[in-house]
Image 1 (cartoon, rainbow, N blue to C red):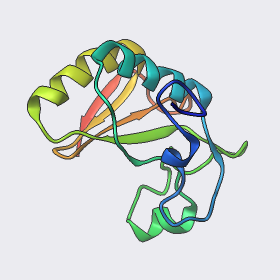
Image 2: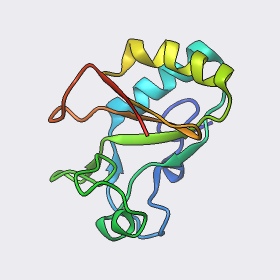
Image 3: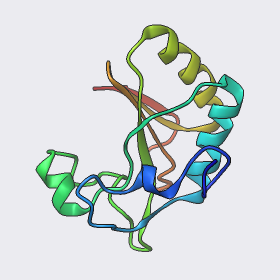
Amino acid sequence: MGDLSKNFSRYEFECSCGCGVGSISPILVDKLQNIRDVTNKSMTITSGLRCEEFNTKIKGSPSSSHVPNDEGIGLAVDISCTTSEDRYSIINVAIKFFRRIGISGKFIHLDVDPYKTQGVIWTY
């Protein structure tokens, strides 16, 4: 049981450095929960919120949607995904809920940043 949705808790989205920066978008959490419900697969969040210092340390994009916006809300998440079968299953559903998807061999990036190009899928 989560405190943000049926399966997701606030701590899963916290910055890895432990600083406690910001909060995650409830729209993002709802969309993730939809994917979880449809696929019936648990999801491990590898990156949620990032403070600017941590984002710089890991060489994240300076305009990363993981870094909270002016309202203190993070708009992006990376979920662990290491098999092609899981990648297909998650992407097949995610494309119905998200308009911005990034794919790597180790994770899937999903975000709800309205100020960035929509209807895109990219690779790392």
